Length: 76
Image (cartoon, rainbow, N blue to C red):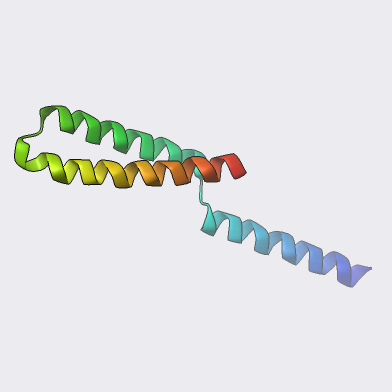
């Protein structure tokens, strides 16, 4: 029984580390991605024609990252 208890404690620590490294702080990730997306959208409003394509591409990528962060938050 002692060996099983020791293995479960070790497994708990390993799972905690894996969760932290794989998912990170999902709540902060969502907030950061939302702020980044808001900043990009505000820049789109004042951007020149030459910058619009770059900002639209960046917006698309950020939306995908935000979707992933929302999914991780849902799983959490």
